[in-house]
Each structure stands twice: as C-alpha cells, then as structure tokens.
Length: 369
Image (tube, rainbow, N blue to C red; front, side, top):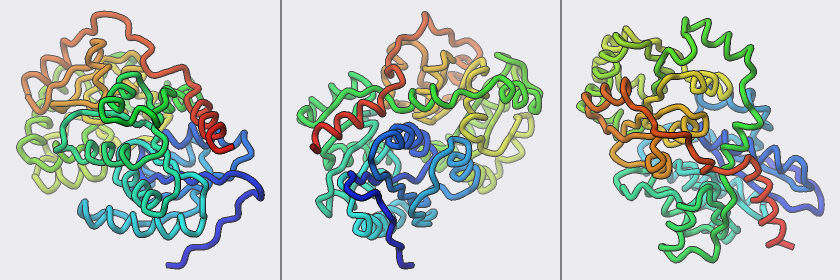
C-alpha cells in the first residue's frame, strides 16, 4: 500500500525509530520522552512484528507513546520471509521520511530490518543496546545484534562489558557508554501501589509468595523436548509455590501443537501483560523464571533472583554478580534453583542511572552540528 508523507518540524533534525516488538517499545519509550523535550522531529516506524493488542498497542497506550507514523503490518512468517518483507517496507518508509539518523533498538528482526534499510541507503544508523554478546550464534538474536553493530555508525552501550566486546571486534571508535535506556523507562513508569495491589489481588497472589515465568524464545518453544521438560518442571513447581505464566501467543500456539496445554492447568495463566502490570508482577515475585533477555535485566534491576532457561545469556553481568543462574531446559536444575537459589549479596548498579536517553541525544547532537 502507498505510504503517506509524514510532516516534520521545519529546520530541525529528523530521527526515525524503527521498532516492532515488546522490548523495542520499552526502549523507545525512554527515547521518545527525551526527544519530545528537544527540537527534533521523531518519526516512529512500527514494522508490525508484534501485532496482537497485548504485545503491541497496550504498550503504546500504557507508556503514553506517540502513535506510530507508519505501521508496516508485516506480521509473522519464516525468518527469511519476515526479515525480507520488513526490510523492503522499512526502506520505502525511510525514503519517504529522509531522516538524518535512524535508531534501532535491541536484537529483534525489526532491529536488523531497520538497520539494513538504513545502511543500504547510506542513512546514518544508531544502535541502542549495542555490544551485547551471548557468543551463541545459534540464537537469531545473536545474529541480529552482531550484524547491526557492524553496520551501525553509532553504538550506544548499556554496560562496560558491552564496550569491551565492541573493542575486541574493532568497533571502539564508534562506541559510547551511555547506560541502559530500560532503566530510564523503569524509573519513569514505575507502577503505582494501587495497580500493584489490584493486580496481585485479582490473581490471588501474595507479595513474594509466587514465581513469575515467561517463555518465548525459539530455542525453547520450537523444540517439543525442551518445552515439555520446562512445562513439566513448572507443573511440579506449582505444587510448591504458585506459578504465574503470562503466555506469549507464539508459545500458546506451540503448546497446542504439542498437546501440552493440559500440563499447565495448575499454573496461573494470564494474557501477556502491559508494561506497568508486568513490572508489578516482577517486583513482588519471589523468583523469576524466564528465557527473555529483557526480563533477566529487569529482574536484576528490581532485585529479584532470576532463573534463566537458556545455556547462555547476553547479560553476563547478572550471572557474574550472582543474581541470575542459567539452567537451560534441565528439569532438576530448574526445580532446585527456583526453590533454592539465593543471591549472595546486594546487586551492583550495572545498568546506569536513568539518564541514558539524554546521553544518547547529547552524543547525536554534538556529532551532527
């Protein structure tokens, strides 16, 4: 379908943000808030990678994000087909907008598509949350983040470890230590106590008396053996402590496909939650069991012990600091660590002070004068 021309402020810098999935929206919220206070035209391009209300629109509403200027409505598909369609439609949008800079966020397919569309058209590209490495190239997210880092003009790093990773790859001259924009969002959008009490009350939960779990990574959902082991362990755990499971639509599809839905009858299953609602559940969980990179980090920032259903993680600092443990899809490890894991000490301030977006804009401003 033909794309409309978006009006921008005259005689100002134009930044285009390409997003498409839950973690992108959370990072975008921090940048959108910072950009709104500057004389900058900010164009939001939503690829449509996540399109269910609970995975997309609810974040724009709950975090007061501006409505996307373009919704490319790409939807689902195989890795190659989705990426190709996203890149083609992103390119068309960028050629309409003609931005001075494109920003992409994290490690999703939308991130790579936006990056390729910008780079192929010689539009300066900034990668927010650059430099993360799990060193596991079987992960689609690892492929995405490595490729985007190497085609970007600005690499905005959340941690010193990320800076060191990029230095080893010869990318130090375009790397900047800014802190993590997700901390900005968590500071700005902290859930009010009334919402916390309401959410826990509706689900029949007591503070620090339940485990929160999320599952969505392809390495877990696409394998019947791994997903079956994880679900069996969760079912066993639910006999010891309530398990809250906001279910990703993709995960639900695989559970139906594998005939595993009846194995989660003891879990407190909900639809995917909005940002503030999910933060409320995270904050008062006794443990968090997840395969999400963003949730690992949020757990650390909130001081909640995290059990990660993967063999590797890009957030290595959380493991080194003793607040995150990797258990893969091992049923016994998952059961034992969820009930018994105890971090040795108070966590460090690894991810910044809540002013990452401001630093990113200052760097962009300085370099484009």
